[in-house]
Length: 501
Ligand code: TNX
Image: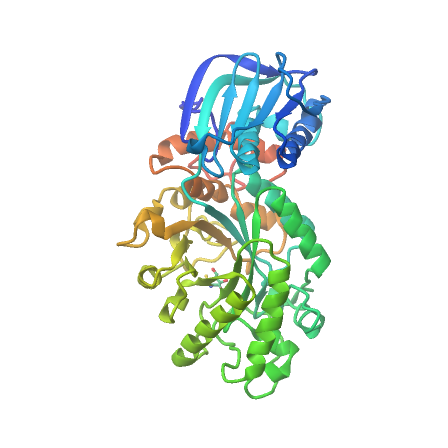
């Protein structure tokens, strides 16, 4: 079996890699030097040190200094002038004496640090002291992403995941250079974000989940804490309130939002398409203005997701009217709307972003209206699909999705007739009908999420044959991080990885 990958096992695959001879050793007296005034650059250096300390047991002091490094140091530098790095790109130059990380922006430096982490032995990601040695082969890497939007969507409505669980997921996203966390906050089965002016949304609407579990919700304080945590890892949280369908939890909380004034019973099944906001009532728009105003205040990034999928109980004319009106509300709150692709049936603002999931023709209609696309083709990147016939978790409506299937596709080929500039990026949705624990989440998301990260970051030239050998090297790393991934048999995992989980 082909063992060592030809390429250093960095995921996503970098743009250019030039290996050299010899190795750099991270030793007990190493320092992390920051050649930049920028306080954010210093923060990136501190976070790198924080990552490397537990396994090495070294002190790794971080200093902002203009002084020359000495052998054994790691140096982070902001290089404002180097246009070829873009906003998120970086260079890593590992020599026998020094490891240098360079970028134009703190985000780029952060990604350089993630690459350095991945160049070190997998045990570096263990939370406890490990023997080492901590060597990195001499190499020069020049890297920048293909797409600006590299996302993961987590459905916290069907089953709730608390802030601690989501933070852990953010850490894993950051390691693989993902930068958008889309939270599906509301659906028929639960409403997960506190809105002070509509307290029943959480008093009533949050207390259910698929299968009748206890539900749960984020207070504004805890949600803001999550947003700040993600931001420090260069991940933007994109909140979604799904509408005009998928609203049973809201209607169950406020009878006056229903057209007939009767609150429906809470819903704990997994059907879709049966609920709708009342398009003809002015109260609907006052409600949305409050909810979206609240979310806008909690969102430093530019986007609010307003759903729009599977509104099977909304009349087509009403649907179009609604989508146009809700875009104006988002706009009035200073944000840009992102919507599922069904919204292309309505008139879209040119600043709209449309998320493709099932029908390439709808996605093409969105592009024809000037919208940009986030690609989430369900046959490829729906992390809630089963891997194969034996998968105990997951759904099957979009087919089964092996690790290979979720990797081996080309974003530019998903929707015919569009250009590269029409694609904002790629996002993997993890719907939670079949999962309510960390173990279930890990098993469905990993390792497929790594392949999606690569589809979003790396250039067209990538092959499954080569990727699988790089991916194999991430088995021990994911284990060191405590991630209970699916050891898909098509990947040549090292023997220490417990196969067949
Ligand atoms: C379709 S994808 C949905 C969700 C379900 C998912 C399950 C989309 C926009 N809507 O409501 O959770 O399938 O895979």
